[in-house]
Image (cartoon, rainbow, N blue to C red; front, side):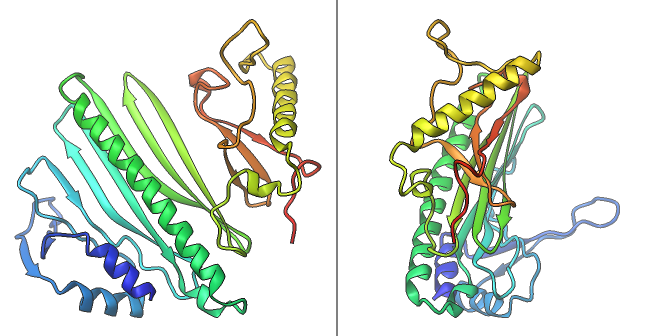
Length: 296
């Protein structure tokens, strides 16, 4: 089943060739060879063997200064909860503008086959992976389109979009998509995705407080407390709405960005410029166990 899903993902590659290019030690491009591929047969065999560590597939597009590549970045070993590949890689370079955008593809892994509680976690994990894939694809497409539209308007612009598995523990799987944009100043925007491995569900903040309907108020008070404590000790102030200032932190909301860290602690995340000056970067607030802690 998982082989078919990965094959289906790779089926998005419309071209029927692999571009293979090597470089000699002097950096010169070697002769390029084109090989027709039979996707289903090849990818099924490669996925089942899990023997390859890295395989790069590149699409041949008519524009030599801009290309989109589809790549199997890493074939995870057996026993993984999720399989994660780089499905699409967009690159652009013209001397003044550059872009590198990696779009991952997530699918349920082999470990779910061995779970004693049956197919429900696997189905949930597959559904969660699909939600993540859809959201990431939408975000990366928007970033690429925005970059293209800005080419004629800016003298210099750089876009770098990457992803990272922040946590892969017994309880949680956390994936982060990071978008670095540089145009005079630089800014980074992170998107976090947290999956409960026991249920297979992609978590929302509300899911962490099933018995606490006023969790938003409780978290708001805690973040406000930490901000006030920080401002008393540091010259680099956080922004806090106090009735007069319309900028800064006001409240925690249902779609608040968050993740679970390696110590099973809840971390609330605020993008650059939202609760502090841009130069201070993304701000994170660790929520004490007295407010939230992992339950078995």
